[in-house]
Length: 572
Ligand code: NOJ
Ligand code: CA
Image 1 (cartoon, rainbow, N blue to C red):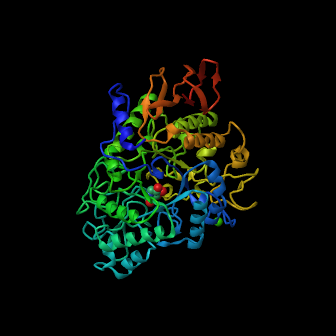
Image 2: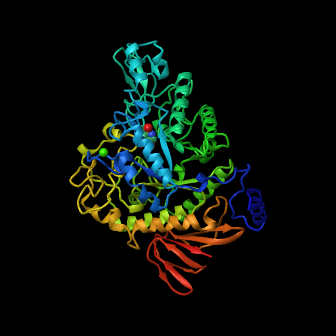
Image 3: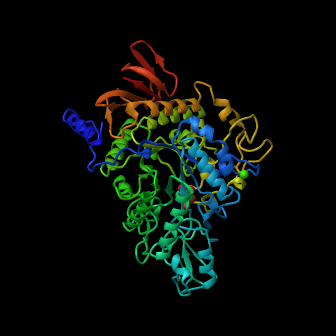
């Protein structure tokens, strides 16, 4: 059934119920791979280490492609692996067209892309355009050539305030804590919204724009299928870099209007990038990391002639209760639908406390800025599995962060000397505790590094003793393991006709504490997802055959008892 026909069916149905999501207001393009793709985030330094130096690398990832194929994802997104002093784990790039020796070579990247394609997996790479490393050639030239030089114009250099220029040019705080300005030897200051080792580019400068168009082409020519755009909302700053006044809280990721985030000027950059992506064959995409004040502003990044997807951080931070989950799902679908874009769903990534820990610790949905605490691992895992099964049943594209398919918890007791997150060391920053979700993956064996690297090798962050039981080898083939839950969910998602479209969700009346929705194929409800978010078991009538459960249920012939924090999928 074509898109227009589907919309007419939808409209006919709308006449009967107000529970369907709003129809798109613009004609969506034909279905493309990314509209409902499951994309697996690889954090290269923590995925697989081929040479035993304790840091994951590109050949390590290549060696694990069969695992990703078996898991059933459509694409991988790799966090940065470019040349970098690693002041922010690679989000400080010193050369955008080379691979850092700790991760391998450009030839290794080519091999990885070709290998992934041979397995039918697409490859998305990270692009970091808001800032470079302070070791980038341009910044080094800017430092050497001094005030007023041409290279200083490619960054934001300013004289300081105060009698002798001893005060920063404005009052902006860095997201990692402390001021967003650092003074150099000749007395000028430069802007860095993140660490001092990450100076912000001046995107008003044509050379910066040209350079990034060339970088895009370099990786597209190498065969990548798309880009994840780091700090996509940060490139343009308000003219004059005005002070923000008393309350610095606004500054922290997507709170209110800001002189350095989500400025309208960013969109012309993405329109020009879209033209480049469209020049290449094979549906190449870009996904925005854009922390905007609301979903309508986020949707601006995915208008027809801009980027393809934007991360849905509003969903990531939604409280674990029926009312707020349903409201956020509705708002997300409506906001993206209004511009003809798919909604995305994410529960974990390399910047937030893993949802196995977070959803229990912070049922109110807070994601960042809070120290993780130990939670009951059994209850935490139960809730995380229920949330994942809910997420994977939603229309649109889902992002999985490496290790969540193993149910890995946040590691909360890393020694201070092992931590590398610059936010930890600058204190009082964005969250300061991002190392705990970056601990290397356990693949097999009884002792660390659990197959992450060669036996007896190291891992750049210590893995907990308890992780032997969570390894891939320990879970593979074990029916009720988290790995097998993800494999089963992804297999159903790929094959079930109702789980392909992105415009076919209808809420179903459910008992208190329970969220239930159906998905349609050819106008008929053929799939239902029921989630018990309450703290009591709930008995529901069987609407059809059980396809999948996130945990044990008591199944009778006509009714099924769902314990708290349990999701079930039904075929109707
Ligand atoms: C967002 C990335 O996800 C995070 O890890 C990084 O520290 C900042 N951007 C700065 O690049
Ligand atoms: Ca290595």
